[in-house]
Structure formats: structure tokens, C-alpha cells
Image (cartoon, rainbow, N blue to C red; front, side, top):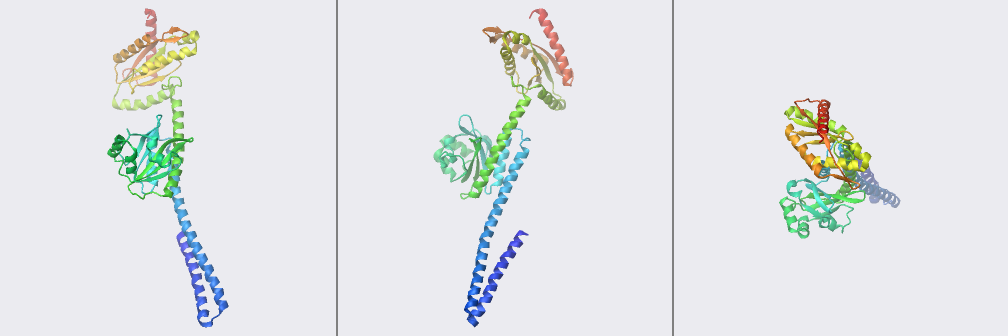
Length: 408
């Protein structure tokens, strides 16, 4: 509809021009009417000005419309990122999604990488498109080695285009990094559009968009990537905030092990898989002995030290697949997968010996960290969490009573 209207306007202006010519020529050739010629020359001039002005405006309109379309597509991709941010489970998946979107929205983009600045001021490859990730992920670049840093004299605030990138890498990188990039097919590109990711005024990383064409990318692509990377920085920051909130909602603030609520969620989740695969596990209920007495005698800081000593010792002696959670003030719960009761007891007794040999000190005095425990087994004892806890809790009190009787 728009194009039809634009064509009609052009035709109308052209007709005005033609009418002017038609009015001008007869009096010029046949009547020599100077006044008529002057009038019609004015008419033609106006028509020409209108035509040329519209032609220029039309071109600008088309370019603006094209830019608007590109920006709209970019905004759509950003909005899509924002919509799915909560659904993306971890930062690595987020990096992959951001990079894929960047490659999609830039014409002539064939490959790409997203690199992030680590604590040692080195850039690590976190996501790639079109490259061998296994070969490239171990390469670390010094910030000063990057083409964007050198091209901008360290002013990494705007996107920049680097052409003949292979020659650049060969001249700047040491041989080991150059060979590693070559092995990962990182030297087949000819042009790179590099864009910084800035979060809270600090460089966080870069998005690099690559092409095998030497004349790939233009100022429009620079504008698009600048907008995209700004929004990507916001998305990454928000994702980190969500991660922090989720972590705090799932972990005990002192020990950083799972809290009771999240442990119960995990139990329901893995129980479905356990029943399907016929796996077994042992649930262990721990109770720290004399924690109240430690708090009353030496203060809560000493009590916290005792708790941390207990938890850290357990962490070092369970597998990554096992679970540990704080279930109450001095109560902890653990699940040991695919382990019989005897092997679990063996590990618990090892933990006891380690705690005996590494006591906690408070006000120059030794504070012994001791605990009682009870074990319930799946599937022998039950499948319901609360029933397993009741059985383990009962056995824990039996263990504590017998230990006190024996004076141990």
C-alpha cells in the first residue's frame, strides 16, 4: 500500500513536469510569447524542485524504514532474551543464546564468539558459533592482545570493525595461541565486528561477529551491535541478580549448604528418577551435640565455628552427587546415593575421627565438635521423606542415648 502511494506521488510530480513542458513549447515555437515562457519556466522549476526533493526524501525514507526494520528485529531478539531469562538455567546457556541472537541479526555474519574477562584480566571463550568449542575454550587472551583493544587504543566503549584479522592475529598473538586458534578454525575469517559488553561502567567481555568477506559489515551493523550489546549487558546483569536471589533462597546463609525448603524440593524431583531407575540411597540425620552449651559458654561465634567445622568436614568426605542440607539450627540431613548402610557408616566414622583431630578453638580453649546420627534406607524403610526422617531421627536418638550410657 505504501509503495503504491509513493509511486502515485512520483507519477503526479512527473505529470506536472510534463504539463509544464507541454505548455511551454507551443508558445515558444509558435507565438514567441516571452511572458508565457517565463511563467512556464517557473512552473517547470517548481516541478523539478519538488521532484528532486521528493526523490531525496524518498531515499531517506527508504533508508530510515530499513533501519527501523533492523532495529525492530534487534528489539524483538532482545525482548525474547528478556522473556526467557528466568527459564535459562545457567550463565553458560545465556551466553550461548546471546551469541546466537547476535549472529542472526547481523547480515554477513557467519561465526562468532563471546569472551568474558576473568579475575586475572584475561578473556575466556564462553560461547562460540561456527568454531570448535573444545579446542577454543582453553585459550585465554590478554586484554591488550585483542584487536578491539589495539584498534581503539584501549578505549573499549564502542564497536569496531577489524579487517584482515588473520594477519592481525599472527602479528600480535604468541605462537602457541596463534596455533591454537588456527586449530580451532579461528583464522579462516577475514573481518570481525567486535563489540564490548559493559556492565555498571566496567568492561565485562566482548561479542565478536565474524565473516569470511573482507568488506563485510558497515556503520549500520555497528549501530545495531552497539544497541544489542548494551541490552545484552543489562540481560546478563539481571540474570546474575536472579541467580543470586535464587541461590540465597535455596542455601543456608552460614554454611552455604541447601536449606530445608529447597532440599525437600530436590527430594521430590530426584525421587521420581530414583523410582524409575530402581536406585537406592541412605538418608542420614545428623544432630550436633552440645551446640547450645557451646553458644552459652563461648558465644555464638564459637557456635558458628563449630557448625562450619562440621559442615566443611562432611563436604570433603561426600561425593558431588550426594546431598547435604541444614534442616534446623543444629540438625543436618544428607543423602548418600548408591551406597549401602555399612559404607555410609564407614564414611561417618571417618568424619568423626577427622573432627576429633581438628578441634575448634574459642578464647584459647578447645571446643570439641561432636555429633550423633541415624540412618534410614530407601527402599527398605520407606519412600516418603517425612517417614524416612522419622526413622532416621529415632535411630539418631538411640545412638545418642547409647553413646551417653557408654560415656563415649
